[in-house]
Length: 171
Ligand SMILES: [Mg+2]
Image (cartoon, rainbow, N blue to C red; front, side, top):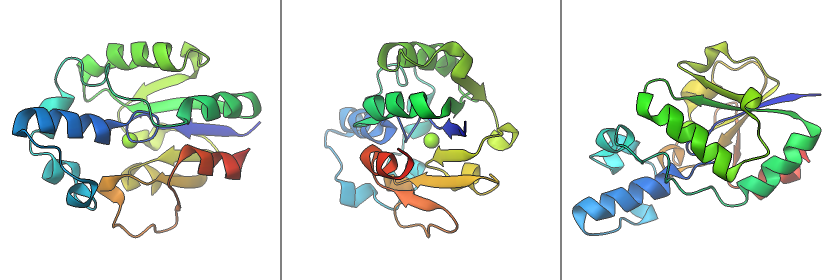
């Protein structure tokens, strides 16, 4: 059975939407997709570091559209691991575990990996929104399209725009 390493933020957790909500709370206006597309997160959202270290940010993040049903299907035909570089944000660890328990109850704790740098990850397929995680990965790589990577050259990675698109390739 092939093993898939699936990122959380920007892949199954819609942190761009969460940033938009926090940013609107602080600045009184919701930014448009056009305004943030192609910008690094810290450029698009000036307070983003503050947000990711704040209580509740990860716990209340919206779920990426269609990720639940498709992950459930993938889980039946692949060895699925949720891999999140989360240890930089200590308060996020419990929040992410609770979030997964609520939204992805079919993923047991044995299939959840919280780490620092993802070079430690051994799998056949990686789905991630950051080049820094995909570039060194020896297996098949899917770049989950997000505003921060929107204008970047895909390089050797397969850019995907949605979970149904991933399903059409892997299922
Ligand atoms: Mg990510």
